Length: 193
Ligand code: SF4
Image 1 (cartoon, rainbow, N blue to C red):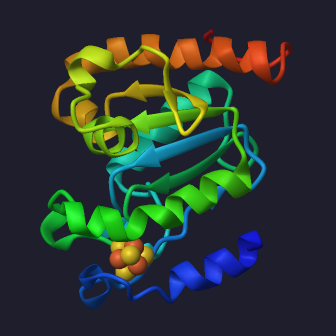
Image 2 (cartoon, helix red, strand yellow):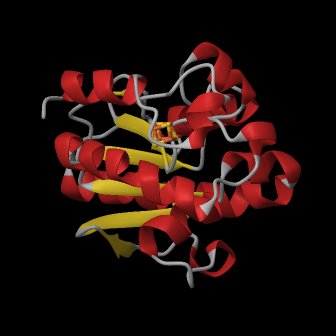
């Protein structure tokens, strides 16, 4: 399936009950050939209204982190979520919802074909790597996900709740920049890494 056909299918998806309460199914955003694939949990209120991923306060913080790394949404990353429609009241998606929606994510990963996956928060880590994984223990450590290198990091919303997590998260993202230079572009520029 082409990227555009997949997008059309996802935007019109009604496979699970989240379709009954959403405003938009959110396909994802970024470079369809990006070498970094970002996986969050689910769209929030602002994302559901605008139909774009990570545009609320968490997304604005994520953009600042990208900028410090020398990454932009347009050139370096593709951003998606474990589920593509907002769970009511921003609750964590249920196992059934994840099971129904995650094949869309797998297809996106195969089409984008990134070298690096970034898992934002516990929901992304557990659903991509296994329920026994713990973000508090494994953030900042490279793991294997779907035969690709993956870096678990705290979700930006956790950083907004607990600013003390910003420093360790920055250390984790610095590892991503180093790996990007190693695997993709040795001349990648970041003013801070
Ligand atoms: S959450 Fe996923 S499976 Fe459920 S309706 Fe939205 S796109 Fe379809």
